[in-house]
Image 1 (tube, rainbow, N blue to C red):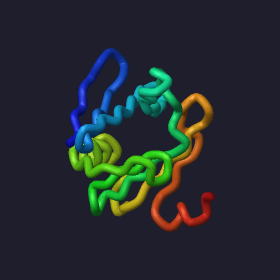
Image 2 (tube, rainbow, N blue to C red; image 1 turned 120 degrees about the horizontal axis):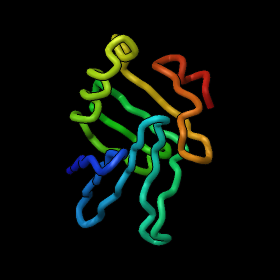
Image 3 (cartoon, rainbow, N blue to C red; image 1 turned 90 degrees about the vertical axis):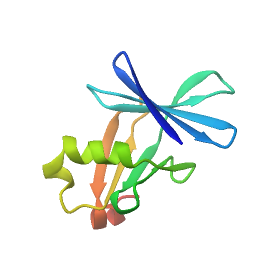
Length: 113
């Protein structure tokens, strides 16, 4: 189950998987993504994320955390229709601060390692 809440300048996505809750924070201007680390009680930057529109699946840090989140992906398509039209896979890489520094789509992602 995924719950999204707006808090200040960030959107928090709380992913409940059984008894475990994983929280991803997305901020705008510039876009940054971080994940809550309960053991250190701090936000950790993500190394990357990938979304597959055909399955409504989003994965963070490779396949460390994968969830089905149709609402978020539909909002991405609505916010960026010219960018996502005809696309199925989008991947992003983040720098050490969690800011997007690389993105690719579909077959172009095969070129990015």
